[in-house]
Image (cartoon, rainbow, N blue to C red; front, side, top):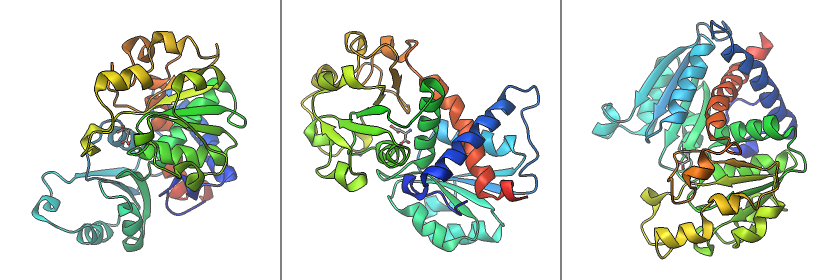
Length: 308
Ligand code: ASP
């Protein structure tokens, strides 16, 4: 097993499949009355969040606790980070506390990679700027596999604000490793030139959502990340929704078996309508539940749980 999980590209097909299979075993724990395993008893997991998060932070916390690890939650607000303490000094503090794993979210792309150079424990990237979010890609792959029975040969459309999406980047990398075909869909202003080829050969780009829908097994809607937009990338929210929003009529153009995903948080009414988000095709709530099992698997495998 690898020591850190920083990028979707860190996982080859065998390792990614091992994570998904282990997550499936972890999922059985969620159905028990006592939702706990002793696997990481005596180990310390630090959640180091420099950026807001709802699902990811709670999910990592639940995952570590279900494996009986000691969990320290560190949020940049209210810590010495607010006084200007550098990431390196924070890393040295964590090191001194004997953290076995550090789960880090940071607004700067590449911050988890730097952290991995400074601490002895495992580092898990829980989202760095617009760069990557590998555990989201793993939980998405897990959700596709459990709904559709396979990943190899699936056609997945990733739709919307690709430019600012770490979810999109990690998904392209992981899905192509696992044999799925990805088409990136969105306005030209939100799909970086050359991104498809740079991430994974075989990835397509299409600017016409309606043309792609009848041909996909999965449509993954991305949040429009207004907080990262200095400029205006499209004329208006209404115009965006009209061309790239998934609404009822568009959903009905999907093949009967196709599923609709979204990593959350959603801009309901913009990239996705409530009718779609709350429909039986939507896996949005399942994705959250699967996130705990997948993060349990990641922590368990990184901390050597399978070797003991
Ligand atoms: N929650 C995801 C992330 O942190 C997706 C999003 O924020 O749109 O990247």
